[in-house]
Length: 96
Image 1 (cartoon, rainbow, N blue to C red):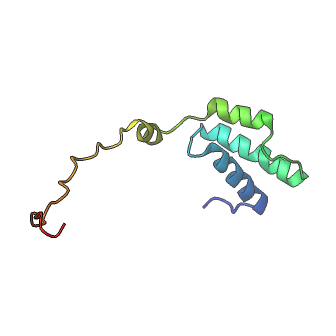
Image 2 (cartoon, rainbow, N blue to C red):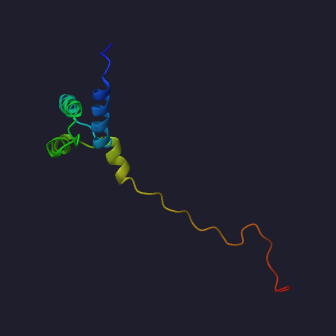
Image 3 (cartoon, helix red, strand yellow):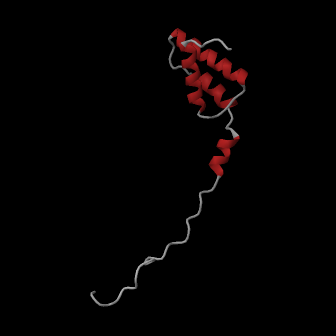
């Protein structure tokens, strides 16, 4: 069983996952970025994800195949319009 994470490690992991927004990256690089963010948290540095880290993430993160396919699926076409008086008795000119 892996060791339990500290609160700063959990916060760093959450920050990196939020920035990735569903993208993935090589595990070794992901762990290194989480470690760097955890060091920034422990040192009280802001922002947690500086320009260098976000550039590294953006250069190595990839959209998963499922997310990529979801974006290119066409929307279903609407069906034919229903007749306006479907299911109603024909109207007469009387009473108009």
